[in-house]
Image (cartoon, rainbow, N blue to C red):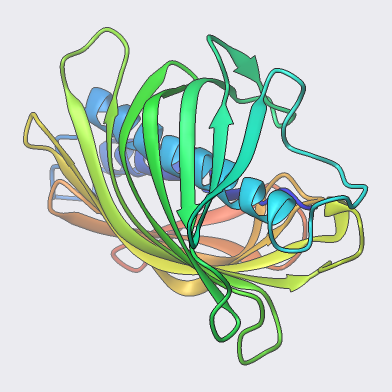
Length: 277
Protein backbone atom coordinates (compact mmCIF):
# COMPACT_ATOMS: atom_id res chain seq x y z
CA UNK A 1 0.00 0.00 0.00
CA UNK A 2 1.49 3.32 1.09
CA UNK A 3 4.57 4.56 2.89
CA UNK A 4 4.05 7.23 5.55
CA UNK A 5 6.96 9.73 5.75
CA UNK A 6 7.00 10.05 9.53
CA UNK A 7 10.73 10.64 9.75
CA UNK A 8 10.73 13.92 7.80
CA UNK A 9 10.13 16.06 10.89
CA UNK A 10 13.44 15.14 12.47
CA UNK A 11 15.68 17.17 10.20
CA UNK A 12 13.61 20.22 11.02
CA UNK A 13 13.92 19.59 14.77
CA UNK A 14 17.69 19.64 14.62
CA UNK A 15 17.83 22.50 12.13
CA UNK A 16 15.54 24.63 14.23
CA UNK A 17 17.56 24.13 17.38
CA UNK A 18 20.85 25.02 15.68
CA UNK A 19 19.32 28.03 13.95
CA UNK A 20 17.95 29.17 17.29
CA UNK A 21 21.41 28.88 18.82
CA UNK A 22 23.01 30.95 16.08
CA UNK A 23 20.27 33.58 16.21
CA UNK A 24 20.89 34.14 19.92
CA UNK A 25 24.63 34.36 19.46
CA UNK A 26 24.40 36.79 16.53
CA UNK A 27 21.78 39.12 18.00
CA UNK A 28 23.63 41.76 20.01
CA UNK A 29 20.42 43.15 21.49
CA UNK A 30 19.52 39.85 23.14
CA UNK A 31 20.46 39.71 26.80
CA UNK A 32 19.38 36.11 27.34
CA UNK A 33 22.09 33.49 27.14
CA UNK A 34 21.28 29.87 26.44
CA UNK A 35 23.87 27.13 26.69
CA UNK A 36 22.86 24.52 24.14
CA UNK A 37 24.78 21.27 23.89
CA UNK A 38 25.21 20.17 20.28
CA UNK A 39 25.67 16.56 21.45
CA UNK A 40 22.38 16.63 23.35
CA UNK A 41 20.55 18.29 20.46
CA UNK A 42 21.83 15.75 17.98
CA UNK A 43 20.96 12.82 20.24
CA UNK A 44 17.46 14.27 20.63
CA UNK A 45 17.16 14.57 16.85
CA UNK A 46 18.35 10.99 16.44
CA UNK A 47 15.75 9.82 18.95
CA UNK A 48 13.03 11.61 16.99
CA UNK A 49 14.33 10.07 13.78
CA UNK A 50 14.37 6.58 15.30
CA UNK A 51 10.83 6.97 16.60
CA UNK A 52 9.40 8.20 13.32
CA UNK A 53 11.34 5.65 11.27
CA UNK A 54 10.18 2.71 13.39
CA UNK A 55 6.55 3.89 13.39
CA UNK A 56 6.72 4.06 9.61
CA UNK A 57 7.92 0.45 9.48
CA UNK A 58 5.31 -0.82 11.93
CA UNK A 59 2.31 0.92 10.44
CA UNK A 60 3.30 0.08 6.87
CA UNK A 61 3.75 -3.59 7.78
CA UNK A 62 0.28 -3.63 9.33
CA UNK A 63 -1.33 -1.92 6.32
CA UNK A 64 0.39 -4.21 3.82
CA UNK A 65 -0.37 -7.43 5.67
CA UNK A 66 -3.72 -6.87 7.35
CA UNK A 67 -5.93 -3.92 6.39
CA UNK A 68 -6.91 -5.15 2.94
CA UNK A 69 -3.31 -5.22 1.77
CA UNK A 70 -2.75 -8.95 1.30
CA UNK A 71 -2.72 -10.07 -2.30
CA UNK A 72 -2.97 -6.52 -3.64
CA UNK A 73 -0.31 -5.25 -6.02
CA UNK A 74 1.42 -2.48 -4.16
CA UNK A 75 4.70 -0.68 -3.73
CA UNK A 76 6.11 -2.32 -0.61
CA UNK A 77 8.42 -0.78 1.93
CA UNK A 78 10.05 -4.17 2.45
CA UNK A 79 12.62 -5.71 0.06
CA UNK A 80 13.56 -9.40 -0.16
CA UNK A 81 15.97 -9.12 2.77
CA UNK A 82 12.93 -8.81 5.09
CA UNK A 83 11.29 -12.04 6.19
CA UNK A 84 7.63 -11.43 7.09
CA UNK A 85 5.83 -14.18 8.99
CA UNK A 86 2.08 -13.82 9.52
CA UNK A 87 0.47 -16.18 12.02
CA UNK A 88 -2.21 -16.71 14.66
CA UNK A 89 -2.16 -17.76 18.30
CA UNK A 90 -5.79 -18.35 19.24
CA UNK A 91 -7.57 -15.04 18.79
CA UNK A 92 -4.29 -13.13 18.52
CA UNK A 93 -2.80 -12.39 15.10
CA UNK A 94 0.93 -11.83 14.71
CA UNK A 95 3.25 -10.24 12.17
CA UNK A 96 6.95 -10.87 12.71
CA UNK A 97 9.34 -8.67 10.73
CA UNK A 98 12.80 -10.27 10.66
CA UNK A 99 15.49 -8.10 9.07
CA UNK A 100 18.40 -10.43 9.76
CA UNK A 101 21.89 -9.05 10.27
CA UNK A 102 21.29 -6.10 7.92
CA UNK A 103 18.53 -5.02 5.54
CA UNK A 104 18.16 -1.77 3.58
CA UNK A 105 14.48 -0.87 3.25
CA UNK A 106 13.06 0.75 0.14
CA UNK A 107 13.01 4.15 1.91
CA UNK A 108 16.76 3.93 2.58
CA UNK A 109 16.72 2.99 6.29
CA UNK A 110 19.21 0.26 7.27
CA UNK A 111 17.80 -2.08 9.91
CA UNK A 112 18.55 -5.35 11.67
CA UNK A 113 16.92 -7.55 14.30
CA UNK A 114 13.15 -7.94 14.39
CA UNK A 115 9.83 -6.35 15.35
CA UNK A 116 6.81 -8.31 16.58
CA UNK A 117 3.26 -7.04 16.04
CA UNK A 118 0.36 -8.63 17.96
CA UNK A 119 -3.31 -7.72 17.59
CA UNK A 120 -6.81 -9.05 18.01
CA UNK A 121 -9.72 -9.12 15.56
CA UNK A 122 -11.41 -6.05 14.16
CA UNK A 123 -13.76 -4.59 16.79
CA UNK A 124 -16.12 -1.73 15.92
CA UNK A 125 -13.91 -0.74 13.02
CA UNK A 126 -10.66 -0.64 15.00
CA UNK A 127 -7.60 -2.78 15.60
CA UNK A 128 -5.38 -2.56 18.68
CA UNK A 129 -1.81 -3.41 17.69
CA UNK A 130 0.91 -4.01 20.28
CA UNK A 131 4.51 -3.96 19.08
CA UNK A 132 7.84 -4.87 20.66
CA UNK A 133 11.42 -4.56 19.43
CA UNK A 134 13.74 -7.56 19.52
CA UNK A 135 17.45 -6.70 19.21
CA UNK A 136 16.34 -4.04 16.75
CA UNK A 137 18.75 -1.50 15.26
CA UNK A 138 17.92 1.29 12.79
CA UNK A 139 20.70 3.29 11.12
CA UNK A 140 23.12 2.25 13.84
CA UNK A 141 20.84 3.14 16.78
CA UNK A 142 19.49 0.42 19.06
CA UNK A 143 15.82 0.37 20.07
CA UNK A 144 14.10 -1.45 22.93
CA UNK A 145 10.61 -1.26 24.40
CA UNK A 146 7.51 -0.83 22.30
CA UNK A 147 4.01 0.58 22.33
CA UNK A 148 0.51 0.26 20.97
CA UNK A 149 -1.43 1.55 17.99
CA UNK A 150 -5.17 2.08 17.82
CA UNK A 151 -5.82 1.77 14.09
CA UNK A 152 -9.22 2.99 12.92
CA UNK A 153 -10.38 1.87 9.50
CA UNK A 154 -12.40 5.09 9.30
CA UNK A 155 -12.69 8.03 11.70
CA UNK A 156 -15.45 10.64 11.83
CA UNK A 157 -14.17 11.96 8.50
CA UNK A 158 -14.19 8.47 6.93
CA UNK A 159 -10.37 8.50 6.84
CA UNK A 160 -8.02 5.84 8.23
CA UNK A 161 -6.44 7.05 11.45
CA UNK A 162 -3.81 5.68 13.81
CA UNK A 163 -3.16 6.75 17.39
CA UNK A 164 0.24 5.65 18.67
CA UNK A 165 1.30 5.46 22.30
CA UNK A 166 4.99 4.65 22.59
CA UNK A 167 7.63 4.09 25.23
CA UNK A 168 11.02 3.32 23.74
CA UNK A 169 14.65 3.53 24.78
CA UNK A 170 17.26 4.41 22.18
CA UNK A 171 20.99 3.72 22.40
CA UNK A 172 23.56 5.49 20.24
CA UNK A 173 26.96 4.55 18.82
CA UNK A 174 30.08 5.58 20.76
CA UNK A 175 28.33 6.74 23.95
CA UNK A 176 26.79 5.24 27.07
CA UNK A 177 24.04 7.91 27.08
CA UNK A 178 20.59 6.54 26.22
CA UNK A 179 17.30 8.33 25.60
CA UNK A 180 13.77 7.32 26.58
CA UNK A 181 10.87 8.76 24.60
CA UNK A 182 7.24 8.65 25.69
CA UNK A 183 4.47 10.21 23.68
CA UNK A 184 1.26 10.10 21.70
CA UNK A 185 1.00 10.66 17.97
CA UNK A 186 -2.15 10.79 15.83
CA UNK A 187 -1.93 10.38 12.06
CA UNK A 188 -4.95 10.89 9.79
CA UNK A 189 -4.67 9.69 6.18
CA UNK A 190 -6.63 12.40 4.35
CA UNK A 191 -5.81 11.90 0.65
CA UNK A 192 -4.69 9.03 -1.59
CA UNK A 193 -6.44 6.19 0.29
CA UNK A 194 -6.85 3.15 -1.98
CA UNK A 195 -5.31 4.76 -5.06
CA UNK A 196 -2.65 2.06 -5.42
CA UNK A 197 0.31 4.43 -5.22
CA UNK A 198 1.90 6.32 -2.35
CA UNK A 199 2.74 9.40 -4.43
CA UNK A 200 -0.64 11.07 -3.77
CA UNK A 201 -0.73 10.43 -0.01
CA UNK A 202 -1.45 13.33 2.34
CA UNK A 203 -1.39 12.97 6.15
CA UNK A 204 -2.41 15.23 9.02
CA UNK A 205 -0.31 14.80 12.16
CA UNK A 206 -0.92 15.89 15.76
CA UNK A 207 0.52 14.82 19.11
CA UNK A 208 3.12 15.45 21.78
CA UNK A 209 6.17 13.66 23.19
CA UNK A 210 8.84 13.91 25.87
CA UNK A 211 12.41 12.66 25.61
CA UNK A 212 14.67 12.18 28.65
CA UNK A 213 18.32 11.19 28.57
CA UNK A 214 20.42 9.42 31.18
CA UNK A 215 22.68 12.51 31.41
CA UNK A 216 19.71 14.62 32.61
CA UNK A 217 18.90 16.41 29.34
CA UNK A 218 15.22 16.68 28.36
CA UNK A 219 13.30 17.88 25.32
CA UNK A 220 9.60 17.98 24.42
CA UNK A 221 7.64 18.52 21.23
CA UNK A 222 4.04 19.63 20.79
CA UNK A 223 2.12 20.05 17.54
CA UNK A 224 0.21 23.32 18.00
CA UNK A 225 -1.11 23.53 14.42
CA UNK A 226 -1.74 20.32 12.49
CA UNK A 227 1.31 19.23 10.49
CA UNK A 228 0.66 18.34 6.84
CA UNK A 229 2.72 15.77 4.93
CA UNK A 230 2.53 15.16 1.18
CA UNK A 231 4.55 12.10 0.28
CA UNK A 232 5.35 13.51 -3.15
CA UNK A 233 7.12 16.41 -1.39
CA UNK A 234 10.32 15.94 0.65
CA UNK A 235 9.25 18.58 3.20
CA UNK A 236 6.53 19.17 5.75
CA UNK A 237 4.30 21.63 3.89
CA UNK A 238 2.18 23.20 6.65
CA UNK A 239 1.61 23.35 10.40
CA UNK A 240 3.48 24.47 13.48
CA UNK A 241 5.60 22.57 15.97
CA UNK A 242 6.56 23.83 19.43
CA UNK A 243 9.91 22.61 20.77
CA UNK A 244 11.15 23.03 24.36
CA UNK A 245 14.61 22.25 25.72
CA UNK A 246 17.05 23.78 28.20
CA UNK A 247 14.21 25.86 29.64
CA UNK A 248 13.54 27.57 26.30
CA UNK A 249 10.46 27.21 24.07
CA UNK A 250 10.38 28.11 20.38
CA UNK A 251 8.35 27.12 17.32
CA UNK A 252 8.82 26.09 13.70
CA UNK A 253 6.20 27.16 11.13
CA UNK A 254 6.23 25.08 7.95
CA UNK A 255 4.13 27.32 5.69
CA UNK A 256 0.75 27.30 3.95
CA UNK A 257 0.80 24.02 2.04
CA UNK A 258 3.16 24.77 -0.84
CA UNK A 259 5.86 22.21 -1.55
CA UNK A 260 8.98 24.24 -0.88
CA UNK A 261 12.00 24.15 1.40
CA UNK A 262 11.15 27.34 3.28
CA UNK A 263 10.16 27.50 6.96
CA UNK A 264 10.24 30.03 9.80
CA UNK A 265 11.82 29.63 13.23
CA UNK A 266 9.96 31.71 15.83
CA UNK A 267 11.33 32.81 19.22
CA UNK A 268 10.17 35.62 21.51
CA UNK A 269 7.89 36.92 18.77
CA UNK A 270 10.77 37.24 16.31
CA UNK A 271 10.69 35.30 13.04
CA UNK A 272 13.79 33.84 11.40
CA UNK A 273 13.12 32.38 7.90
CA UNK A 274 15.41 29.53 6.93
CA UNK A 275 15.88 26.98 4.18
CA UNK A 276 15.39 23.30 4.97
CA UNK A 277 18.00 20.95 3.47
